[in-house]
Image 1 (tube, rainbow, N blue to C red):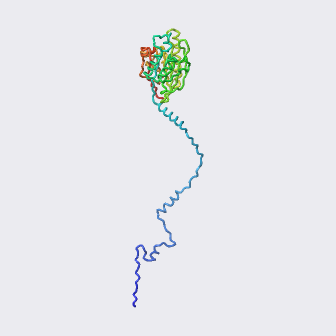
Image 2 (spheres, helix red, strand yellow):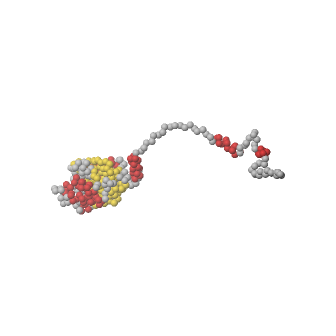
Image 3 (tube, rainbow, N blue to C red):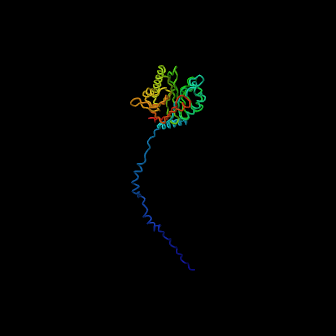
Length: 336
């Protein structure tokens, strides 16, 4: 039996396999050899070591206590800021003066018996207040029954109202509470006819801007005899001095009233207070009263300008009163 030789096939050489062990050993580093890093790595090593820093010691401090601001305080701060912004703008109001003819004058035995009674005249006076569209009006001779009727018909607030007593409502000032809020009130005294009577001082705050201002309202003696002329002049001067005291506060000041004088009042008072009259006229280079005046006045401090003056004679013609109703638009300049 013949035995065939079996040839063992050679293994295929892979390109990645060394041809022999020696070739592999030639490519491997010797045991004592040192492997060198790339030049770029050697260069960056010192920089990396330099970037390692030891943190500086930390100092512990006491924490500040946080205080929560109440919502109402924040709201007040916001309101004050808004008012400050609004105060930088002019503010306007319409102001008037009206002697309503006291109800005692047309009551039985009164000296104006040809006029209708106050029960008819008071609603007419309220209609005039609305027609003139005033925000503030200084009244003279207003009696308790008339005052109550005017407040009810107009929705206006009054000062002093009955605060000085039921017999001293005469010189009350009416104002629109939707536009103004009460701040303070007081009085000064003059001789009116045969007695000492309080004249009104009222401090109001305009709601939209927070601007505060003073209003003074008075009624000086009538008559041309020596006695009443003397008390009338004294009343004017007292009113002017009070105006200057109020003006010293830096706030705008208004003066309304039945002064029972025309040009003489203008030249006696306006130069003394450095003010302006709603009816016009000038005190520059002397005293120059306006050409046409009533005895009823609206006057303002130097920071006030007037326009749309209305000297309304219809109350006399309709026998609502024996006086004119005068009113004007007053504009107060911005706060400096």
